[in-house]
Image (cartoon, rainbow, N blue to C red):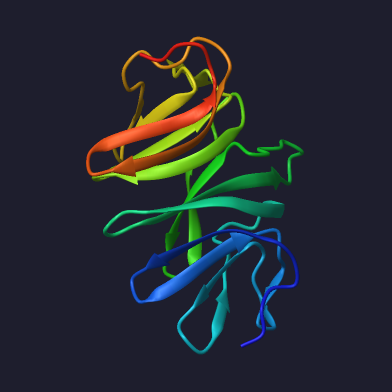
Length: 173
C-alpha cells in the first residue's frame, strides 16, 4: 500500500500487525496522527481517547507480551505542553495516558519482562526522584539502581532481563 506523508521514527511488531510512529498525519490515506498499524494489506490510523489533545507526534514504541506503549510530544487544550514528556498505552483503536508527570524530556522507552522503562533528561515524576531512568510496574514509577547524577540518557535496549542505556553521563548506579 501507499506509505506515510511524513517521517517515520520507529517501527515494531505487535500481535499480527506492524506499528509505525512518527510525525506523519496519514498512512495509506488513513488519518493517523503519528501512529498507524499495517495488517499486511491496510493501514489503520490511531487517534486519542480524549479530546483535549491539539497536536502530537510519536517518537518511540515499546512492546510487552500484552501491551504497546508510545511516547512523544503532546499539547493539551489548557495550554500545558507535554513535549517529549508523555507516555501512552494503545488499547484497541485508542490511546490512554500512562503518564504525563516527568519534569523533562523522555528520549526512549522499552520493556524488560513486564516492566516499562523510560530514559531521558528528567529527574522527577510527581514527587518521586528519578535520575534519568525510571521503571513502571503497572502502578508506580520507581528508580532502578541509583540512576544517573548528571547528563542525560538518550537510548535504551534490553537483552533478556538486562537493561542497557546510552547517553551522555559520567557515572551510573
